[in-house]
Image (cartoon, rainbow, N blue to C red; front, side, top):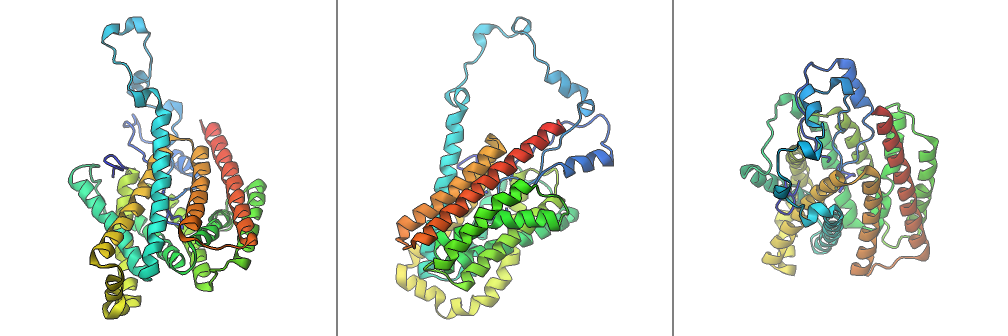
Length: 402
């Protein structure tokens, strides 16, 4: 779905997590062997939800089709049949691509900050995270369906096999999204995001002990300040509650398993369509627990209390906007990754969390102790170091593969 007209990521990872767009390449002259396909998948690297759904397929030079090779051949200017006078001068955005990239980063940060602030404001007068989580996904699904209806993008076909592959991903996405919102509704936004900074630790643990892949010592060492910082912040956090802490941790684990299942669910479908299908499945998964856990309270007094506090118009508009911002910031995160290197995106994602924590403290006037502030800074610094080292390792893997 194109963002802001041409828009093609939260959590999740938990979260959900968590999308890099991949287009189908030209047909190969001969089919790839099973070993070649397996090798391409194995060297893919770890998925980062909301920003990369599946790895690019690296083809040996000998397997590239002849026509593709010819198209890549550059002709000297003298051989060009087009007169020099008819050549079109590049536009401003083509001449200065950094302007477009900067715009994507700005919108990514802006939409994420607005989402987190509006989401918390809703919870202050309507503390029903299961219902609000359903609204987040529902608005995104409606957006996807409308985009499909107008052909932006064209809907990719899906079958039972693809549904079986995507269902575990969507299930983890739904669980991580709901538990993240339970945490956001229970504790301060700044503290919830500090806890969610532990997600890389769970990713590394799952990679080492679940997937059986060796995690370099440098990555483990970079996670030490993350664990230390979150521990420091938790001990003196004024808004601390076990409910908020445990749900944030569950969201971290859920988004970690979402990444694992996403690796097994690689398809040739573009990331926008995959994200749409995952959102639809996650919505279906989230509706029953919302009705069971919060349905009776909502019908008795929850909805009426919220309307009495802020009015019907504001209540409905707040729910619609928070769902729209949730969907758009995840899509913008995908677009941003497509424009920059993984290392740049990783650093940008860390800075995004800093912006969210900082603005939430300013907007809501959250009082934090000195130890909590130091612990938050230490945790964010650890995530930055981890992201930098991991991105460098992935770049080295790709360089060796080519």
